[in-house]
Length: 439
Image (cartoon, rainbow, N blue to C red; front, side):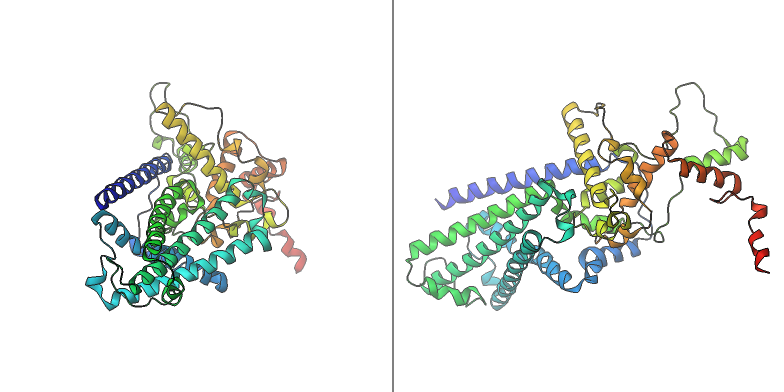
């Protein structure tokens, strides 16, 4: 019977890990559908960003109470799941609390620490559910989250509550079995919370307690495997992608925009025609400006889309959004990810991308893009250094330079900048005339 359980456990573990790795491979392929972008310079500063932003959650601490609660969930997820290593080894080897004989008193200390974190995670998840569904903070009831995104956040919080409850109940019944001197249940000493509750189970038979303890054990590990394979389909993929996203974040000054090399070259070749490359034949690809679809964005922008936490801090900080404009930076990221997933499924079904008559403009409207003031507030507020602004700029460049789609006011400004080197309709020679009136 024990051997059968080990075989079942190994098969389930292997299947869960295979499914996860397969989906992560698809996501990686989707991300690298984007254009190349070199972001490996200055590694020391990038590692510093990773430690401060991803591990330390530096930006979250602008709101200290929320940051503490978020950090508890984050630490709980990372640290408590170290216990999963023991569960996996126990399942494969047919042992129980494998590390206890080797760690002794340190083992009890560690499980006590895990229990404190588990209780903290449980309490914070309940608070977060309350904030989302009872208090209904503005950024959590936005229409951006209508449908699946709102349910997704609740499912994750409920799952965390169940997993932490199973962990604590497993320890309670385990300790109760220890007090009954049941076979295979080594004495660990009292754990900080489960040790208090364990005596409440003293009237239960050893058989009943063992059934409860084993059920909690199996449900806990199966829940973790299920959670692992739910992550790639959820906004909570940021738990994994926050780290590479923070490392590869732009190191430029806040708000600095990258010039288009194609435009720079056009100007350079106009001034110095001898530098223009010689293009033979009529099959040369025409120059493209900006982005119409995910293929035209950089791989980093696509990584941003998958890393989005959907927390809404970007939209809460966006002046256009807060004054009633249609723009929501969070929606820009969600729409980009949705389009990328559609493209990925197209490639998977056809072995290559088959034109489907859609692009990013099928998801993101011109009105949204024009509302952006390029103030960089969304980038500044994002806890994991996502830049909706990069995507917005590339889409606007395509609208203007590929489709000549700009309001008349913008075209007037472009003309003035081209002819007068400023947005205003004044000759450069007359620009300082106003100072004469001051003398």
